[in-house]
Image (tube, rainbow, N blue to C red):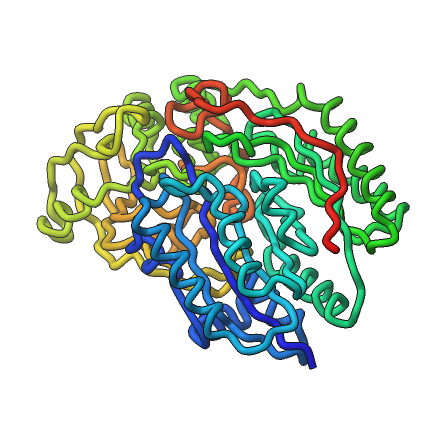
Length: 488
């Protein structure tokens, strides 16, 4: 029976974010070793949960797993501790027949521009000969160097990411085949273009069509898997861009290369479709108020918490107040305001400077007089599709009502809007709202789609702008391939 090690190293790192990432952020999200990994992931809708399910009767040896919410690059002491703990767990591992790795693909740290490659290199130093396979986020900026350290690499198919566990199961099954003697090769190409995440959703064009045509080509060629990774453009590294990656049995390597070349040509032909124009906050709020069917979701694109933003942008909330949007609901991350609300207590009124405290990118603080409607600890467990069944915390939180009858959930910690339980767990019924503000690009749609009447994506200021070109860069994305990657 094969013995398979399990490793995780995960963060989507935003080079422009003001949200620092330190060891405490990993401790709060996931920093586990040994059997604690099994307890955290077994039966859950995570990649590692999928690994455990897909391995079947093979023996899973949980080694090390670290993850943090998207934010600024982890500082050097944190990065060094993570790698040291990884190496300690590898040194204490028994004989292994293979290792499955849960990566993001866009993780950078202070002093380490490619944390995925550093993670895989540490694994290879200890286990140079056994199969090593990795799952990546669809927003991975995966490097050629990282792929060369693996026997197979696959990425999420969906955005919103509803297939994390499915990808874990899929890779675990490939690993079982590899431990039985099968060998795989990969073909790789990167288009050095930054595409807007708002155009990367796999349920709409251009990604929907590109993905369907790519999977049709791969199936016709007998290729195990084709992955389209449009990347995370808010990371200031050369490995940004649109990656196309195919996995095939070793004797079909040339077919994989041909498939990657054809898909690359298709992506290049549709690059104009990734350039978008959306309304500013004033026009978007005005349009939402005119729509008869409610609720209308306003997506605060540049204050995308799932992309590393601080979650305290005030551009849309200011317009809701100015234009008298009664019945609107918004979430703002503002620990200072949450403390002030808690001190005032339920039923009290309090004067606040709400939001806008993290940096100069996301709008100034908004002066409000608020009534404290409810206080809570910010904890919830999700039944949704993103990491189904896992528990999350927004920190001490307060539900406020501000004029003109706008409900604001103030949280201590910015948590992406991947789960509607953020609202329902705090006594807010989103179905009765006129407008709901979500601080995200696309990934919120699976959570809020069932309750919304329509949505308007809003071109707001922030560190995840609609056009990636709005941010200054010190690096130029590299154009690479197509090329074969084959491990001997």
